[in-house]
Image (cartoon, rainbow, N blue to C red; front, side):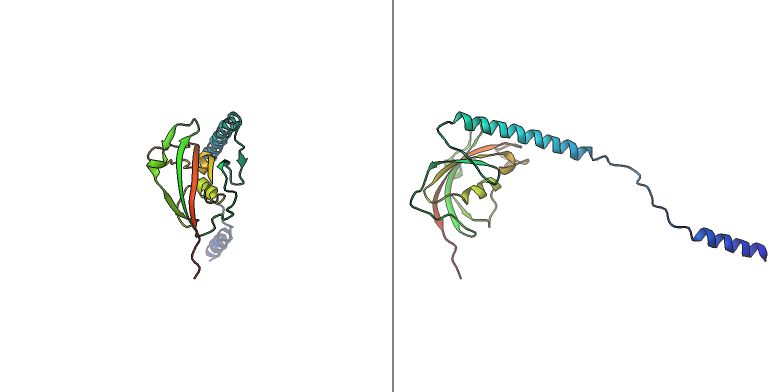
Length: 180
């Protein structure tokens, strides 16, 4: 009987052991994320340098750095009109798209007049924020780094991966959102 009690006490003592954490089978170093971050920093710096070079070469234009990460200059200013589009307003505009070397990617004729319901439809982020700065009759040239344009994916047609863009935009009309 003593061996049975001894075995039970031994099992009880071993059964009360706290569980040990299991170690992972493999360990990820995070090097992919670090390499990706380094690549993006280099891309951003290269695009920034190219945009700054363009701004310096166009001494007749005064470029403004926006809070949203792009640059713009007014080609035609609407002095009298003070209405800028707000959420839900319909903006009718024309624009063309060039790369930073000035090569035309899409002309105004290719794209045609566009209508956009402010912040309610899909539009690349730079142009969406740029339209908010414009009044009827104004023409603005925007310089968008790739992350404010079509980014990594491009437009899957003529605009490739990580291509910074130059867009010349003219706002034709702003239709205020109807209040119910």
